[in-house]
Image (cartoon, rainbow, N blue to C red; front, side, top):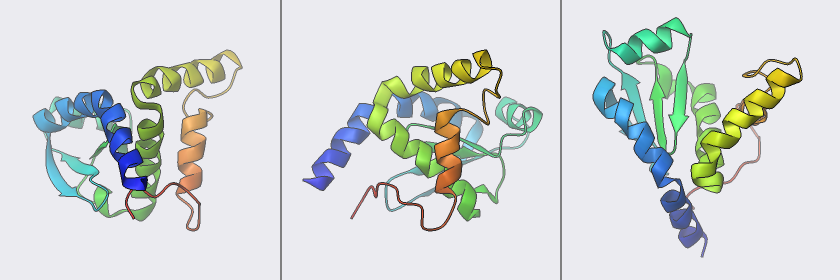
Length: 141
C-alpha cells in the first residue's frame, strides 16, 4: 500500500517534475538517480542556468523529483541533499499546488516584513530536514 501511495505522489507531482526537467535537460547533466528515483543534475558551466545560480548564490533547487545543483560537489553534500529532498517530499504531497503555495508563503512573509526566502515555511522545514535524525517521510521502503 505504501508503494502505491508513493506512486500516486510521483504522478501527482509529475507536472512540476516535467517543469524541472526542462532546464535540467537543457543546461545540466544527469549526475545520479538515487534509490528513491530522485534525479540529481549538475549545472553545466557556461550556460544561462550557470549564470543564474551563480548570480543569485543558489546551491541547488528542486522542481518535482528533479534536483539541480550549481556545482559538482552538490550531490555529495549531505546537508544540501537532505534540504532538497525535503522539497521533493513537499512536492509529492502537494503536487502542482506546491509552486503557487511556495510563492504565496514567500509573499506572506514579505507582507509581514520578514524575509521571503529565509522565513518561507517550506524553506524553514527544509532547513530543519538538514539535521540528522529529523523525521521525514521515507519514499521507498
